Image (cartoon, rainbow, N blue to C red; front, side):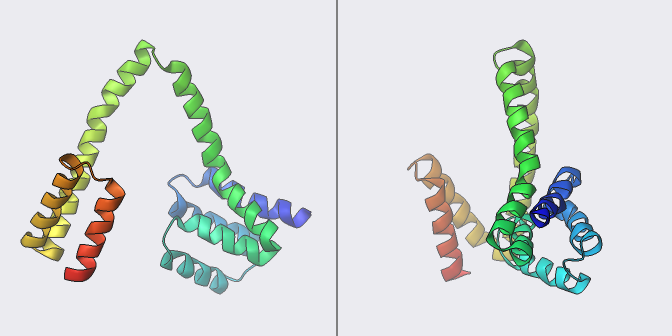
Length: 176
């Protein structure tokens, strides 16, 4: 039972202190797993980190699941994963409750009015970077074809975005 509590703490504390997501939490997890509890060597942790980087998805949750399983079996993996996502979950539920209470108030309307342009600018920057990278990597012709086809499929033909992404992946796999 003490082992499971230690697993929980080893991943919960970095989840609270690791501001900036998984990459910011990795050194904190290493401190807990390697230094505090001695469950792994630095080399083993580096191998787990490399494995986590090689797989798709959030790195810290993959590492938590693997390390938790290695130390405490399936219950250890479940506890490590829970401890990893619990701080974010608690914060999101708290903020959602706060926003729900504020909904319909003048402050909330002002907040959403101020946030919309920021989101629009951020999306514009992402799109600009995407098109710049696509132009360099794929060329003008492929960039124009994919952009135009995506725009038409999404706006005129109302195709689900997941299908448009799948089509783009197939196009890229076959032609790029």
